Image 1: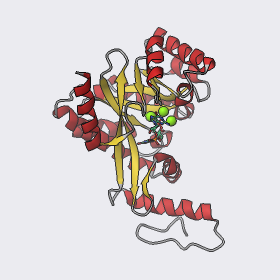
Image 2: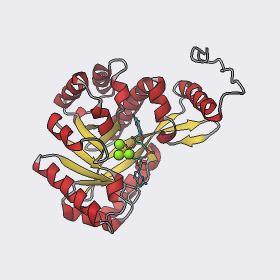
Image 3: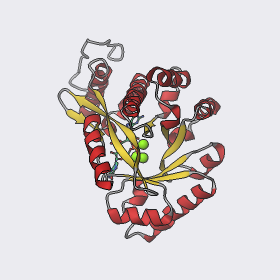
Image 4: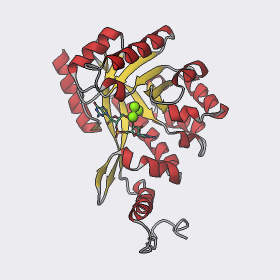
Length: 282
Ligand code: C2E
Ligand code: MG
Ligand code: MG
Ligand code: MG
């Protein structure tokens, strides 16, 4: 009966329910209302070219401004959203909001700015993600050639031919496909064969100790070489150290993203950061 509890009604919490289950169910209830209460927001983190040090795009990262618990990171609620199916409407909102904001930035003069959006495997199992995304692009006027979709290896692990067909259809419109957290998943290299991948995002776990760890350097160098020989771009995530930027540049990595440049910021703050960065570089 707790499952059937509709919107606006509160669940009956029995004393014998353990704390974590209560917390989970409460989060589900709150998340269901989060969309209509407009508590979700996107923060944007810059992606910087190592060829000319310009900001070439942003990654949109979801945040939940919870009325009691404050600003929540996706790690605290994406899992709940996926298990409850709420990721479908939430993911739809993320795509709409990212395209709306991206189109506004293009109109404001940053016409080359790319927008990267994360997709979860579960989103593909609900509704009509393929046509929905194309509709969102048409409605917002956002140029599909500036859109990148980030899928993790675990998403691709469960990918059936329908998912692959949807992705191929998007790519035909100019949308790019990035593999997120590359190197941490199962059988990473097989995806490079099965899919027409545009970009690899080298996982933060290989980047964090790049200065000291010879093994990490060997792995990262190998990933970049494989990517280059297949015509795939690379971006390293989790850059916190300017010396790592130089190491990656020397290895031939194309782009970087990390706290060294900026944490993910709300749109208005990102605009300030961007203007400041561009002025400093000029
Ligand atoms: P991700 O796509 O790999 O995103 C990168 C994560 O690394 C972000 O965490 C970002 O804040 C963090 N990060 C960036 N630079 C640094 C750095 O220099 N150091 C460290 N320590 N961390 C850095 P965030 O925003 O908490 O997101 C976590 C994950 O949640 C994302 O990982 C992504 O898998 C998922 N996620 C975020 N937004 C969405 C969304 O809209 N939809 C879906 N399905 N998943 C999302
Ligand atoms: Mg990502
Ligand atoms: Mg990642
Ligand atoms: Mg990650």
